[in-house]
Image (cartoon, rainbow, N blue to C red; front, side):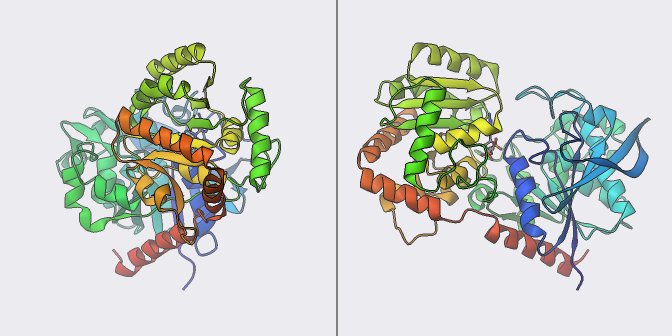
Length: 477
Ligand code: ADP
């Protein structure tokens, strides 16, 4: 059998455009799959993407998309990067914006139309060239399975992956016409959601298979606490729902070869050099004190309330704390205030890939008090860089971080400090455990070394996706 052709569509892909974990996955998973499949990746050509650096050129395909009463012109661009073929969708309304989706933790008002264009462009690509599978990621690609229903001659099978159910792409029902979607889809079984339209719901309803990014999250989203209003709907599609754990690109996230680091390293001595360089760079003292790091979006999801409420208490310990992220203004402002008050707290507002790598390299502990976490990549990166994760045991953090109290050097898992309930008390208790463990150097070092030697790559999970693709083709449409 010739290799299956996969069109992998995502609204962000590292290194071209990234706001979070989706970009990492959309970079690393296709790379892991190209040995066995003919994978092409498609994303929007945002203004911020550096065309020259990646030699992104027009591929000689330009067309018009009619949606509702409007016509949008689209041009396709392409490049090959690290062995993967990329296609970029360029259309002024979609592409020519300062941000991908809107300012941090906000959305542009016309996102339905912008990503509608992206979805129709994907359909055009599927029409123009035969693909066996379209692997569609998150709400920004959710209309494709619905649009394919009306175009049975295309014959592509669809796999829809939910990276975060909290972002569903919900818009007023008035845009249904502007998107050129027939009213017959505006039902409880289809795209309708409490009188509005919901892109993610369309993806779940009409894709042949749905996955999410960890087995625990796949179970959690069937409950009211984690289902974001879609739990009942997901339950009715349970037969086609699976959880496949994310991995990381172990070449990109490798302290040994990391060009972002002043001193790439493979042992704890090398890590210590990175820690002292980093502390100097932010003017904090005390290389012997534990360094707690938080890297992530400043949103409710990431446990920001918990973090900010106990920050003064953590700061009263003999330790340093460094925080990097961007997001809701109320959190950024409060964090800035806290860093002005506490000498041992450094806060950096912004998105900075190089700085994030330096912080993973410097950190002794990585804080993840997330209220929910579909998979989480930070903890996997932290394992590789020898930082011990301190996590609320939820979602993918349950599947990836095992309790350090049960440390077993023969395990293939990574270990960290876990807390079961998202309360200030439990979180603080976990921090106290971290402080004590740090004092017990032989034990702490043994766990760190173990974590650094484990495999968190896409090796296993890309095989799981490969098996799903093959089963979709076998079962046929
Ligand atoms: P998310 O819910 O944001 O997708 P993940 O844990 O899945 O969370 O992935 C987060 C990714 O984004 C990781 O690679 C992390 O290092 C990176 N990241 C998050 N915030 C920042 C930031 N402010 N600067 C640099 N990298 C960041």
